[in-house]
Image (tube, one colour):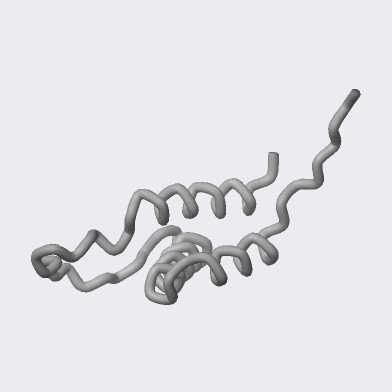
Length: 76
């Protein structure tokens, strides 16, 4: 039996991310992704140390989602 799966479309995937991620993480991910698509990755973020006990904003989960978004926008 052969399974044909439709490729995941970018817009529905982004909507799932919007619903699943905290707003500040979603905004960071989308700003970074947009910069990658439009400026070749040029993104200016203030380099401020994180307060003690606060996590790095671009978490491993966001890094994985960025890779997924990149895969969705490249042609096979």
